[in-house]
Image 1 (cartoon, rainbow, N blue to C red):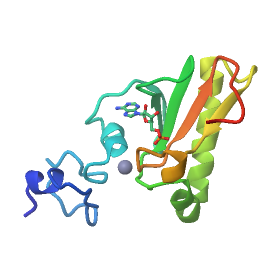
Image 2: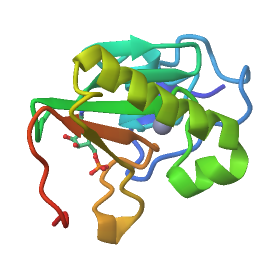
Image 3: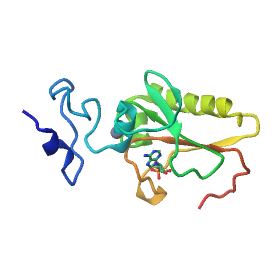
Amino acid sequence: MHGIASITTHANAVTLPVRGTLPARCPYYRGVADCLFCAIAAGDVPATAVTSTDQVLAFRDINPQAPTHVLIIPREHYPDAAALAAADPGLLAEVIAQAHQVAVVEGISGGGYRIVLNTGAEAVQTVPHVHAHVLGGRPLGWPPG
Ligand code: AMP
Ligand code: ZN
């Protein structure tokens, strides 16, 4: 029997085993233990949703860098864009399509916007659940920092 404490108090994230083998009360039942964006996808951590589909969720970045700054995640956990591209390119395409839909909903698709997928340490990926940033609503500088 898995105890919740044994799942959530590890210093290192623990990937949960096969779905359906954990008690339903586990808050990370559908995701990866200690993954912030899995917790947001599960509704266990609050976020401000912009769009939502069965497979993809878009929500506002908690520290916005532009008037529109929205994150798009697959509900399923993949650590980064490379892993998602290798495992499920159709889902990666849905993430990008949803990024454009967010730009339309936010009214920035005509003026232009940026889609960013920080991948790995040197790109300063801080959350190891693949996410696309949609940034816009102001002129964006190039090259990025
Ligand atoms: P990255 O550096 O590409 O991994 O981006 C992670 C993003 O997640 C940053 O822009 C953070 O501001 C954002 N972020 C962190 N925690 C939250 C949260 N609880 N809700 C919304 N956005 C968050
Ligand atoms: Zn995750």
